[in-house]
Length: 144
Image (cartoon, rainbow, N blue to C red; front, side, top):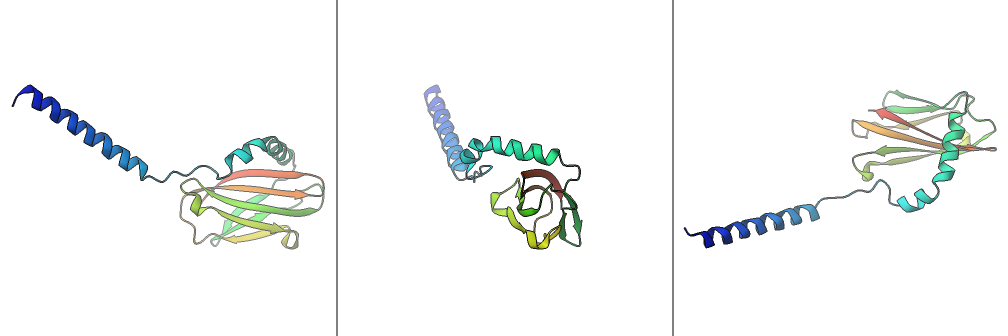
């Protein structure tokens, strides 16, 4: 075999390798952290205030797992009257697995959510709520 054939064969194999890598990378699913990332970035100063408000509370919400139920308790948490809130279970693997639950004033101070259908592993609980005075935000890890 002469050198010209070896060089051409090396270039052809390299081109096939690069083409294969491009096809594989184009078929990979890419999940952003959030679909409305830019809107959230602009509003982040308000989020900083919510986080600061939650850190300044004497008693923070308590999370527990009881019989495949996530229990969120607000025992004397807010300064004013609880209005509404939201619990987001955030999956760091796929945004398709995220869950969002609403918190109404009717069930205050304890809420239960069925988590038996969720995959086992690490989740992030993003809790936001407001009362008549302020808005709050708290984030914590959950191991299922």
